[in-house]
Image (cartoon, rainbow over all chains, first blue to last red; front, side, top):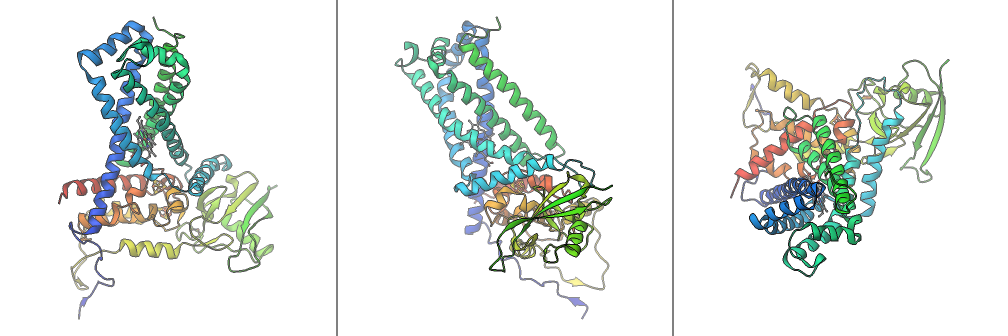
Length: 258
Length: 243
Ligand code: HEM
Ligand code: SF4
Ligand code: SF4
Ligand code: FES
C-alpha cells in the first residue's frame, strides 16, 4: 500500500547498447568532431610555426636560407610536413565544412540573427536594468570563420600546390628546387604578394577564432575562462597579423630588421 | 517630464486569413521604472485591445514573456524601458510557432524536447512514502540546481543560429537539461545511454559554440560550462567504448 510506483513514463527507449545502430552513429559523430577539431588544432599549431619561421626573412636572406636549409637538408622535415599538412588540410576542410548550412537562405538567417544580437548592444543604450549585459560577437565570428575558411581553401590549396611543385621540381620559380629565399622572393615578387597577404590575413583570423572556439567548447571554466580565452586569441590574432604583413613586406624587400 | 516612447511592434495573426504582417507604431508616455511588460499592458488597455502577447508571473519566473526586444531575445517583464532610446522595437521570438503578434508557442517545443530526452529520473528503485528522504551532498545539489533554474523561456533557442537553421537541434535548453540529469546520481542511465542520446548532430555536436545562448539567457545559466562537461564526458565514453 505504501509503495507508490514512480514509473509514470516508460523506460528509456534508447540505450540499445554498444552493438546498436544508434551507438555506432553516435561514435561516427564523435569521431567527425574529433577529426575536425584535431586537424584544426594541428593546422593552427603548424601555421603559427610556419609564420614565425617565415618571418626570418626579416633578418635577411641568409638567415632565411639557413633556416630553410636546416628544415630541408639537415632534418628533412619540409618534405614530410608538406604532405602531412596537405592531408590534414583536406580532412579539416571535409569535416569542418559539414557544419556549414547548405542553403543560402539558412546562411543568411544565421548572419541576420548574429548581426541582430550583436547590434542590439548599441540599441540597449542605458543598461540600468538588472539583466546583465553581455557583449555578443561569437555568432558573427563563426560566420567569419566560414568565410575565411573558404578563402584559405582556395588560396591555400594554390599555395600548397606551388610549394610542393617547388620542393620537388626545378621547373618553377627561380629555376631551383626546395626552400630558398630566392624562390620565395621570386614568388612574392611575381605579383603573388597580394595572394600571400590575403591568405595570411584569412588564415590568421581563421585559426585565432578556431582556437577560441576549441577553448570554449572543451576546456573547463575553472582552467580557462571564456574571457581569458578571448583575450589570448585576440592577442594571437594581432600578433600574427602584424608578423604576416611584416613578412610579406620583407619578401618584397620593403622591410628588414637588419 | 517623462519621455514619449515609440513602440514599433510586429503584428500578424496567422489564424486570420486577412491578416498581413506589418509593423505598427504606438506612442506611450514613459513613467519611472516602466518595464516592457507593463508598457504592453498599457498599450493593450488604452490603445489596442487586439494586441497579443504572453505573460503570467511578471517576475522573471514563468518564462512566458520572452520576445525580441531591440534585436535581442529576452524577458519583457525584466526589461526596463529606460534601457533604451525612445524607440523600442518588439518582435516575437523566431524559431517557435507564432500564435499571433508577440505571442509564440514555446510549450509544445519544450514538451517534445523533454520527451526526446526523457527528462525524468530513470530508476528501478521503488519509492516508499514512509522512508525519510535520501540525503544529497550540498555541493552537488547546488550544481543540479544551477541547471534546474532554467525557466524554459526559449531565449537561448531563439538566439541560437544553429537552432534556427536545424529545427531538430535540441538547443541550449535541451542540452542543459541533459547535463542536469547526467550529474544526478539518482538517474541510473549509463554513460552509454547518454552517448547515444547526445553524441549526435541534434545533440551536443550540432552546437558550434557561438555562445549566443549563454549571452542571452535571462537567468544567466552556466550553459558554456555545462556543454563543455557534456562534451568531455561524451569524448571519454566514446573513446573508451571500443567495440
Ligand atoms: C581548407 C580550408 C578551411 C576551411 C574550409 C575551414 C573551415 C572551418 C570551419 C567551417 C570551422 C568550424 C567548424 C566547427 O565550428 O565545428 C573550422 C574550424 C577550425 N579551423 Fe578551419 N578551415 C580551413 C582551414 C583551416 C586551417 C588552414 C587552419 C589552421 C590554421 C584551421 C584551423 C581551424 C581550427 C583551430 C578550428 C576550430 C575547430 C573546432 O571548433 O572544432 N582551419 N574550420
Ligand atoms: S537556458 Fe536560459 S534562455 Fe534557455 S530556456 Fe532556460 S532560462 Fe531561457
Ligand atoms: S553555443 Fe551556440 S550553437 Fe551551441 S547552443 Fe549555444 S547558441 Fe546554439
Ligand atoms: S511574465 Fe513570467 S517571465 Fe516574464
